[in-house]
Length: 348
Image (cartoon, rainbow, N blue to C red; front, top):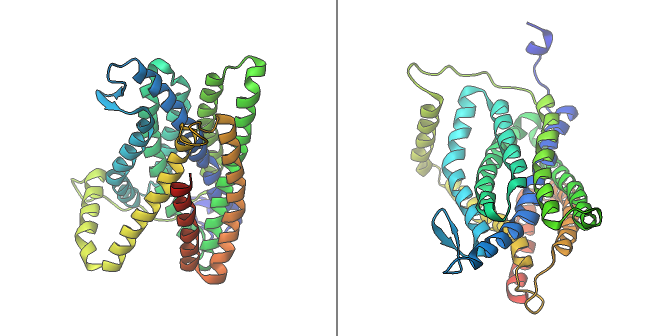
């Protein structure tokens, strides 16, 4: 046994924290390039073309008639519903099997590969965009569960707000840089004989390449910390995972404050994620500016500006949490968020 194998991993180690934050840099490309900018308007346009050929003027996905602009939101809803049942089981299995890092690698790789395959989403295969997104988003959510679980291990309690905001800032900076490259290809591609639809498909695939490539920084620096548990005789990881989940649900009634927290988190986090996911489809739809939506290049520029503002905001909010506390920082951010969304609803 080597010294490296017996050495206790350090806490607040800058090298490991950087590796941890690099996963946010890597996977945020999926959130922005796929979830916010390109895939929603792109598949909505393809679905609209498919619907124009249908007698009922609806796009048919797995035999279900769907309005073109609703296709992507339906895919988001389905993937989130799948996460509700899938992610708690994965968390329990990871805790029991001591395979947290390996499972994070598995789901990151699966998500990145399915994202790369979005290059093949074309007019005849418009529905493939929804299928690949559901798989990729499910894998993305699973990898984030394991990613977040590392925070208490790598940062002491007094440093977690700072480290968490650092991870968020790295994510915004990473997806902002990729979005710059996406914008260059989208705007300059036609001058070099690259059609707009090919540029969009390349940009979709680039998010998967980015995600997978920069994840290797994380794999190289995150270290295992918990000893594996031995499975009871005759049990499997899946059965143990289900039993732990069921046990947690049965005990939840004894922890009313935890139950209220989870319910509140579900409501506010889902609201935020919905706005982020739907914003580009809403902006590109013919609802604004007298019936004309924003064109793709303008939309990219706007969201690109948001990413770099969010980078600074993540660092600022990390400091704010240190000054006034995490709870007050969250409340302030939600008041601002609510004001913006209420204005968007009534003002646009």
